[in-house]
Length: 253
Image (cartoon, rainbow, N blue to C red; front, side, top):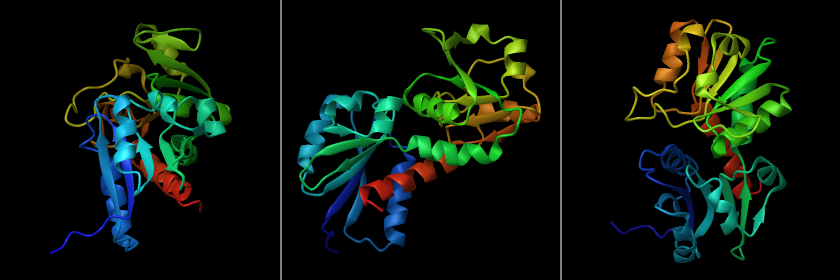
């Protein structure tokens, strides 16, 4: 059986991404759309410096890329243009490549997170804790600001007024912040017993726990919240929504 010629290629840029959601999602999508000469691949690179060569090696077929940890911030230096919203957020997770080979960065995490979170928000979800300070947490903060939800970042090494330490998470703090979002990789398969170090005993039915992780479907973070009757949500719908938004950007639809 002869190998089909790839005319349109899309890729995920990241590090140690064999587990990736994107490749499976888009491969299935291309099958459903009967796009026979289209493929989605992983650019699993150990340093962002390798990206330019990857783009060059595939310049005739590469049409767009998704970007995941740890390169959502570092990729800025490799782009010709950055969308205003992505620049404001400070993170890029989608790249469109023009016919002339110019790379433009966008952020679709914002769209995906908002679509997934908003239906779950109740009147009392006025304050949030964002666990982690990486690229995804910046998109989460951008959405919360738009939704008029006050937030604090929780970090192992806090910097500035907006960030606090895990040690600062007292009973009062947890009880006054009813939305908690995990933007760290803690709990991702295969390390499913890991979870952010927060005092789960103060979680209640008033809380909404949102985990950007989707594998496993119920992380230890979410399970501990569920045990205290919190509403929980994983990151699968967010990923699906941001993937569809990326597809529309690549195809200008």
